[in-house]
Length: 80
Image (cartoon, rainbow, N blue to C red; front, side, top):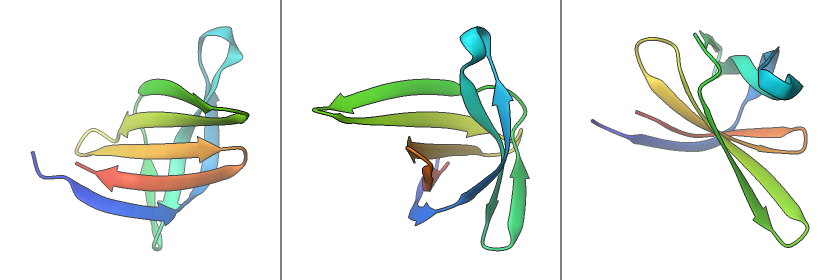
């Protein structure tokens, strides 16, 4: 599996809700392309002092995407 490191901001243009009304990204836009995810993916919460980040691993059926959410800021970490 080849992993490409991106580490760039992305726009989340659609949000879905899972169990307990937990929000997750359904669609992102990056460099003029739109990526639609097929399910809720995997979510991990990371706490460092007062700072809370969420890491999402999502798939569009062809590739997987790892995203980080910190408040309203989203970053595409890598594609694999």
